[in-house]
Length: 470
Image (tube, rainbow, N blue to C red):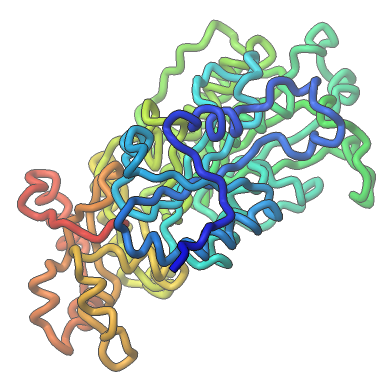
């Protein structure tokens, strides 16, 4: 029987640089962009890593072909890479499971030297869902969205529904001239530098802009200024625990602004951060320093005692292997996952209160996150011992749910290891409880959580087991 030929483009070790890294290379110059391209300042390439002899890889080839044909409608390109014939690239990106779907997204402004000292030029985002064309394309469409949400006008930003976000307020240069020294007119912090801040935080911190009245007309239907004429007057970090802090404001001393905001509870869990800033530094003095400080400040202060985890925040990395540890958390701490239903983490939930109390106690030793198993069902199902998923695949009926698919329960991982975890309650205990599993999980206390975490910190090797690839 003749082997079918599929319609997708291949990439190998030799062509990787030209097809992937250069194709998602950053835009060279803001002013050099043709008018028709100004709305698309980055590119996205999806790479499917396959391996010879992998039956599931062969099985999903028709799906990959469909994704490849439809990806253009969400603004992405698709390539297939064979790790058997070209292993170097796969080793570089630590590809260990097959098939693996990874998106590479360029940074819009990383070559604008005045904006940042970052040497990275792209983001890597891994897909960990079921390989179904509709689901992959939906994910790819999200990866292809701009880093700055510009849908809202003036003060109409929606209510806080995330752990942390950045809000930038935009002026036009003409408005800024009315209030600030015109000698700095060409030095005001430009909108495209704010875009880069948001690109560097992509997948972890959502960004919004508020327009002043001179930027758009009162109906909001027409922009009165080009992006090149927009400057950032204020950058504010907002957290769901009520913290509101200005990262910088046009015309003001950055260090004084940050250090004098004691009433925000900003430093509740942190020592005072000493940023190596020139004396009386303002963002107008050096955009590169300003961008670097903004990104560092957000990384330092974005973490609440308990975070809500998404696949994007967990599987996004900045740049190539040299920067693989940039995220999901720059703190280099173990991560305690609480796998929960939504009702387990409502503010009135007894479990959430116990979890939060534990997170406060261990803030400097471990990152606490919740993972909504209703929203991320497939991903959550991977946080089990290796082969558990396959062994119990046919038991997941409403009246016969395997013990490890009851919630809430806990596991601890290292952010750079996606195949090992420590579980609480222990797997053996849950397996032996029979119909009493849920009653056990409904009564997890802060003392139990803290002891589990401290035992892990003391000697992880006594608790970790090999898991499915999550």
